[in-house]
Image 1: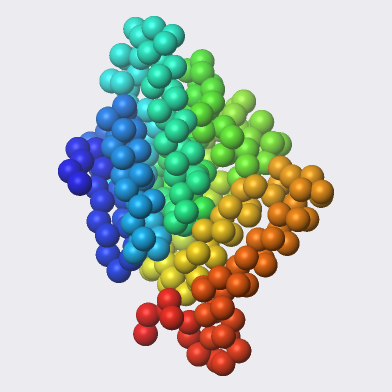
Image 2: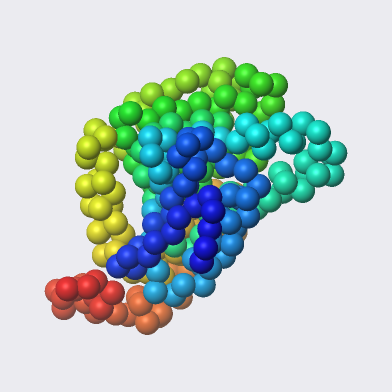
Length: 261
């Protein structure tokens, strides 16, 4: 796959996706959105792939929308704006709902829409050098497409505060509000991501995908819905090939087949 705004490398069942516009701090435009949509469609089809790591090239993770793209948006019709906004909304949902776990390697600034890409990661590990801001209100707009995922991750109270103020946050503040899962010194970032990769690869591939689905769907259910839903889920998994292998491996004190020796 040839891309102009992102890079992709698969290594040892791990897909490494990199925003690759370092000269403008990896800001996104319509081309990047469409390339990411295509890539994540292919990622879903790759049965050998176990995990995705999302990061940025250079000093930044993603600085939000490309200023040149924003200049063109000013002159677009409502219909044109809506079409491009729908593409961004579709991309965020595709990353969020990807069956493979998505780990955010937050190497630097994540501003505006860039924080949305942090929020749709299942687990985000941030360098202490990273900065964050929901800065949209400063230019008279709101973090609309990223909003559902940020609210899910941080909760309504923190989202209200930060969407309204546009506060610039350091990595520790981003951890405090729940946007990132862990903060490490910059030079320790790669080692921490590798540790997380090892943990995920030791888990059942199908179980990981179902775990994502469980966490996404159950909070919106009523008791009469989630009781049969979760009971059926665990019953199916116990009888699945992966569940049978995993339980047999545990009972016989051996590693399951998906753990590479």
